[in-house]
Amino acid sequence: ATMTSLRYSIDEQLLELWHNKTDDNGRPFPVQIRQEASEVLAPRITLLHGKKNQIHSLECIGPGIIRHRGTADEQAVEAMWTESFVYRQAPDQQILIDGNVQIAQTARQFRLAAQQVEMVLQGSLSSDSPDDSLAVDMADRSSIAELKFARLRPRTMTARQEVQLTGP
Image (cartoon, rainbow, N blue to C red; front, side):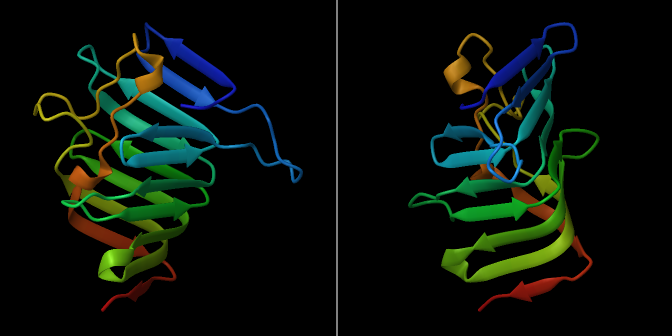
């Protein structure tokens, strides 16, 4: 992960990552998390986890991108937004993406654009164990989160406002 600041609260089980530096237009540089075939970029990333390090929420605040490059078994996926990306574990796993959202699977020639996209999910963001949805190993800062976006499968997806859908 690349950032200028990191704050971890043991009592709150909260990890915050952010950049203090800005570009020439005053926009903060994004925090960058890379792991295996996944990459997350956003100016501020907050992870809230439980006692067994399973993530209860992942919030990316500000303009951001999530890329999963794909492998022989997985599709490449990219999601971009201008406001926020929020993953919540409970009560149902869901993702809410706000602000000029664009989601693309180029291999399938699929592209969705909307102001807001909400997904209720099946699958998990991390480990093969059903107990771990998104594991955080605080002892290894180089591996802040095991993000496996290819494992996520929307059970339902709702796109709102200025929706455009293109596909084969």
